[in-house]
Image (cartoon, rainbow, N blue to C red; front, side, top):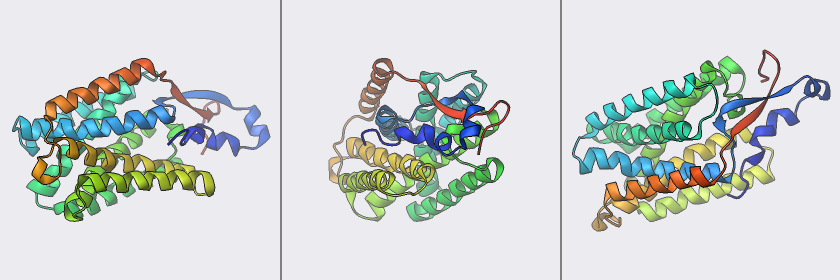
Length: 278
């Protein structure tokens, strides 16, 4: 997905009236610029969320309820820290993303397996919740663009949407691999192909880049979920039976290396003095 959505940070600025542009100044958000590196780290983080969540609930045998409570607490602490931060901090941001993916893993498994909603019921419920959050965000702000994530209110919408999207992605990944009977490898190929279609739509159509961004953001989660399951599930279930903690550690090291080697900077959005454009 080379250069996919690199223009996301200029969508609104490019559509402004020239006189408005002259009165705008560049303001920084607390989310990273959407580049190829963003998508690489995002997919690695979602895979880590799957293996990390399974490490706690299955390998350590904590169970889905205890694992969900643990990661929910961690997620709440990190989201509060992210909102209170005065500027973009790469390690804090991606730690929050990883926390949302691990919580999404355990929460989806709790709903699908322990509560008994099943993959289809869980996916449907989570999709409704995600659409409700995005709808409330749009109703409140007039946009759901990540370019405008710079106030506590919008950050709250942003992280709520991310958390539901991560949980939905886990349920979708399991639904395709298990209920759909496609297995983890074919499931990963399907979600990878879907991301390629979104990239093509970005370059060849006039479909809203904001909507395409969220579609891609959601689909990277089931991609990571199916890859994570492929790594740690037993061979007779279509996996490689790798150690979950070892796979999680390797993914964590990869993400850390990416953050240290690849420059991370806050995404820019066009803002006016005292008002964010919609």
